[in-house]
Image 1: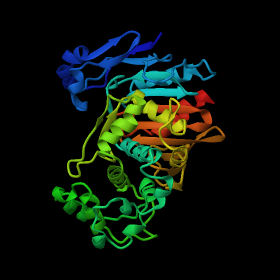
Image 2: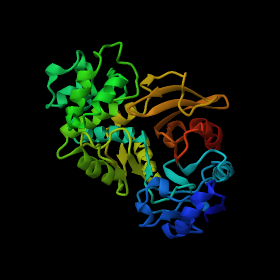
Image 3: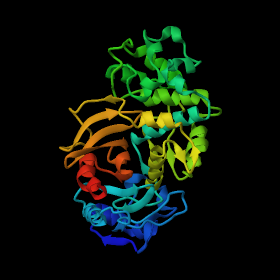
Length: 403
């Protein structure tokens, strides 16, 4: 039986009066079933989606025949009471504005909850978590033989045959795919140059984007090839587009998402390049986020099929470099040693006298897929609030329930 709580939405009166009339019309929810968005409601923009009148908290998730194994929280020694208490606090908006929290333990989904604008069948915007999915698309291309693992250490411009290499900045040939995946490309374009570049969208079509960036960057040097959050995903998506049959868009759809039964999603096309957005602007459901976490924890396998090379996943979900503790994203007193893999962030999360490595795909305003291999634990949540210290919250309130 699901644990269902009634909560008061923290929404201004004007919002309530505008949308309460279709809250029931566009949302289908019963006592024992997770809230769903109706077909009409699914056409609304995210800002138009009404807040749930009732939080949904389930410590024994339903088997929705979507490829996700399910279990019961507490059946394997985990502390059900701690998790449910935390969920009640989320429902009371004591930790920001969460939309969902899902937990898988030992390969099974054991906790599922929805709040705010969350719905079980509503794709939630992903922001920079999209970078991780773009990286996995490259991994899929390697698995199918369109690239090799060794190609990660070759100049990425070798795969883009339409570039005029004579016009590129010095050192452009030193950028490898591994540099792109770890945000260490060395590309440095001033804000002023960026403004000029993106005022001329016609020159950015296809590989024109990379041509323009590498004509306007400062020279690429060993000194510049340090971690800087920026162009890596765009470089990766361009290579996927160049090496796979058809388009990157169809490849991602047919060879990655469909393979995991992910069909209810949105992935915007970049209006300038014509390619899928590489670093943001995708939307998937919370359950499908769980699938990506399972894929990573199973070293690239989905239901027994190797979709991504195990080596690619192992490297990608490791801290290949440290980015420093000066500004740990969503951190707190128990979070340290921030690092980076292939578009996955890594941190140490301290519980008592012991620290656990958490690797996460994450996006602004609270989208996170956190894997903690040592505990065989996967945590997914969505939100629309960038203020909470999400990783500190995970360390304080979630990890202890599984130790």
